[in-house]
Length: 542
Image 1 (cartoon, helix red, strand yellow):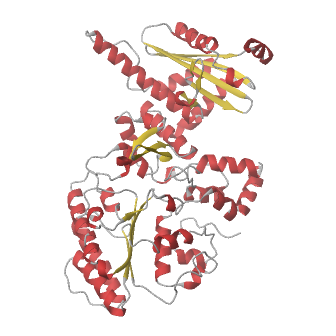
Image 2 (image 1 turned 30 degrees about the vertical axis):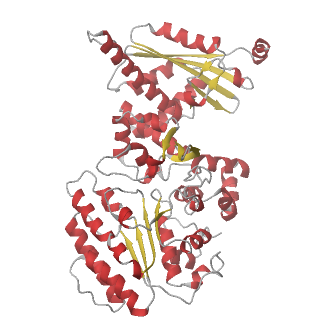
Image 3 (image 1 turned 45 degrees about the vertical axis):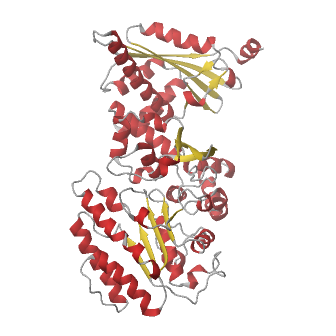
């Protein structure tokens, strides 16, 4: 089997050392033959740097690296173009002065290798001078590849020097407009499309392919690519986990597939996929490599947990640009990979997008992080506690389940208790706010365990709070809140509502467990019951 290219961002290294490569050169050929100035946004660890490296090797005519790939017999290997490749992860950018110094040195190093003398003082001037000099040297126009163009901006969010860093980049990137006559191809990658940087307004011919369906799979693996390129790893992993190939493919898809940028073409997270086959175990590989704490805190602070629990409908403007001074939540979550486009449709003259969390890896991890943030329960213990509580439901252990609920909710900063506000309207508003807080926590916990919550399960008799379907069993849940009503009364109401509205009817082919959960004042309780025998239920339904 070919080696898994974990952490390999060099196309030359990958192709020269027998690493597995999923051929993306058909997309690349279409791109370079139809566009001149291109921008692509994708989340971190999604293969952007490898794509940039592939373009560099293509334009510098390293023909042997492309043998056997789609583009091999379609490219003119007799032409070699000078390439300026800028990777902002390797350029110091903590301040404007540091950027000026480090970028000037980097451009000088390229000039030295090409026997070019740069005379201008500042980085932007040297950039323009280098482009023109490389073109005039052998008559071939220049290719400029800029990887992670927005990293200095993102790293400076909230810092005093943020405005100066953006000003520097604005002056640097605008050079590309004046150098148009000397340029063969320009390609830029980033996580975000940032406003207040003139590159998007100055370059009139810039083509943003982020949502272009022709390039929806230029990064990441499609289902067909996964099964064709990883066939040996799939068989080996299925054997190791002692499950069928079909079941393994189902679970890999559920965990790591689901990213779409056109609402149609679904791709796997390449980093998580590679890590899965390397470890032969399901885990949250991508999420754990760098999910920012500020994002979790922001979701909590702004009451935005529902944005990752339920589908969101957004218009085209949500994807236009992003202002680092006034962060907008939906574009931020989409561009960073925590939401993805699940559906796109035309509404009048414009497009409407439905956004959701892409897959189980992101959903499960977000639930754990958010639940820990809301309850102050340690993140490291959250998953174990949740699984323990799930087993207690299956064992009808209401006492231990209730004790664990109390443990999890012990440090919630608010309690469901009557408001002391003298104004009835204010008191009611406070009570509703407390109830909403507990409902969000409840939904997060249920989603973390794999329950389908309200928006996903409607019946002809009403809306089920949550249902968890496992092999041979369905757990149907109803949640009740009240600041003053007794706990037993609320639990009676919860179980009665499930029975009276027959929320269990869609699941008569399996064992059914009824779970009532109630919050009353500072107290929490539960009731776990089994339904009648299956034959009785079917007779009752008929």
